[in-house]
Length: 343
Image 1: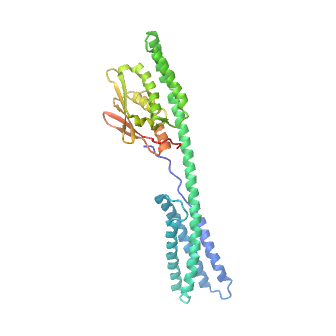
Image 2: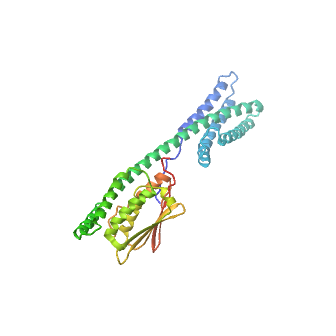
C-alpha cells in the first residue's frame, strides 16, 4: 500500500491566542479603571475572568470544531457544534464568575453573572466564527494542495506510462519477431504488422485520457497479447472471463497491458513452463492473476509499474489496488470504476 503524504495539521498561533485573550481582559477592565470608585481587586478579578474565559474558549473551539467537522462532514456555520459551544461557554463563565464571587463576596452576584454571561456569549460567538472561517480556509487549502499533488502524481504516472509504452526492449523484440516472420514467409506477418500499428496507434491516441471503457482497454490488450503470442507462442496464455455488463465500466489506459508486461518481466515464459494469466471480476474488483514461476534473473524493471497504477487509482477513486501473493499465484485486484471521473 502506498501512503499519501502527511497533511499539515490545523494550528493557530499561540501568540495570537494569548495576546487576544489578554487584550480582551484589558478592554473589559477599562470602564472600571476610569470609574471614580475604582477598586483594584475588582479590576483584577474582571480582567482575570474575561482573559481566562477567552483563553479556554479559544482552545475549546480550536479542538472541537475540526473534530466535529471530521466526524459529521458538516461545514455549516449554524450547526450542533455552535450550540454545544455556547452551552459550554455559559457553564464555564458561570464557574469563573462563581470563583470571583467567593473571592469578592461583597459584589451583587445576580447582575454581575448576567453581565458576564452576555459577555461570554459575545466572545464565544466571535471566536467560533473566526475559527470556523480559519478552519474552512485550511480545508480548502488542503484540498487545493492535495489536488496539486494528485495532478503532479498523475503527470508523473503519465510520463512513466509513456516511457513504458514506448519500451525499446519491447519494440526491439517485436521488430525481431517481425523480421523472423518475414524471412520465413510466415502468413501471419501482415496481421502482425497491423496489430503492431494498432497497438502504437492506441498508445498515442489514449495517453491523454484519464480513463477508457473496459471494452476499449481489452481491445488494446488483445493487440498487445497478439504481439506477445507471436514471440512466446504456446508459452503464454491470457484468458479473460468478464461479463458484457462490465465492459461499460472504466479503467485507466493501458493498465491491463502494464500488468501483463509485469507478469512477463518477473516470470518464466516458455513452452516447458507456460505462463497463465487470467482476468476476471470478483465483486467490485477486476482481478488479474497469474501462476507464479519467478525468474532467477528478471528483466530490467524500474519498479514503478505497480506504483504507477496505484497512483492513478488513488487519483481517480481514492482507493488502493490490492496485491496478494502465495507460493503458487500472484494476484492484483483493481477497484472497478463504475462512473467516469468527470461525471
